[in-house]
Length: 115
Image (cartoon, rainbow, N blue to C red; front, side, top):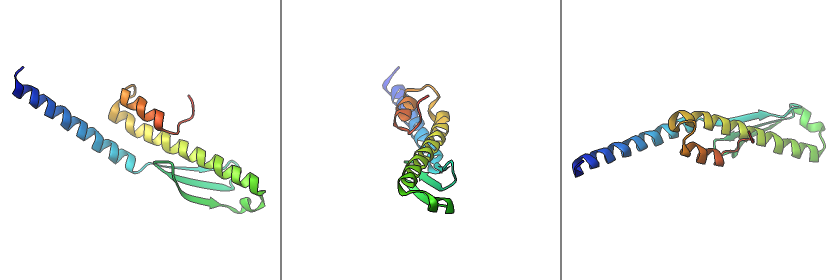
């Protein structure tokens, strides 16, 4: 293999990486997670990073003691983050492959429950 062939192959690999990165960005753009508490008192929506974007307290929340309401908000937010992480994982597997090293690194940073 001469230098031109090597360079052409390298440029092709770089273009493939760029394409995968662009696809991953597009796939992740719409990821959000929403969860409703088991008692219906709290509804939480988070963005792809897990940051809370929306919090709704229903009428049922008004009768809960403050500590219970706080715990319900925390638990519901955790479940919303898990939902966003599942969506992110599902969006990225076709881009990087189910068992790839890249997916393992990404999974280690997602808020997924233990399997």
